[in-house]
Length: 65
Image 1 (cartoon, one colour):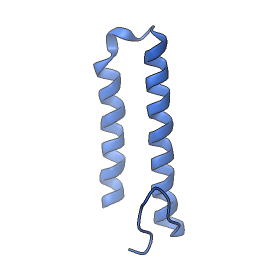
Image 2 (cartoon, one colour):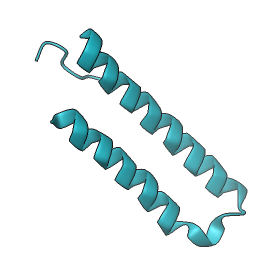
Image 3 (cartoon, one colour):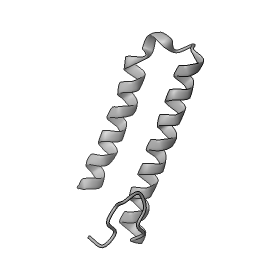
Image 4 (cartoon, one colour):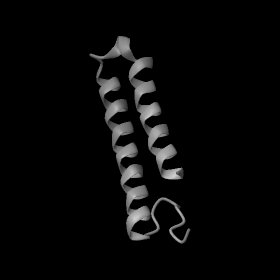
């Protein structure tokens, strides 16, 4: 259940960034912020999946639970 809530929170953060900066779609800094946030969210989601299925410790997740 924790991983499901984590994925939902990642989606909310990404969607929130898009909504907050909707007026700045053509700016270079907007593209950098969105792409960097996307990379961080994808890495965190991948780490949580690896922990869930392979029991490997990444990003501070405890794989023993």
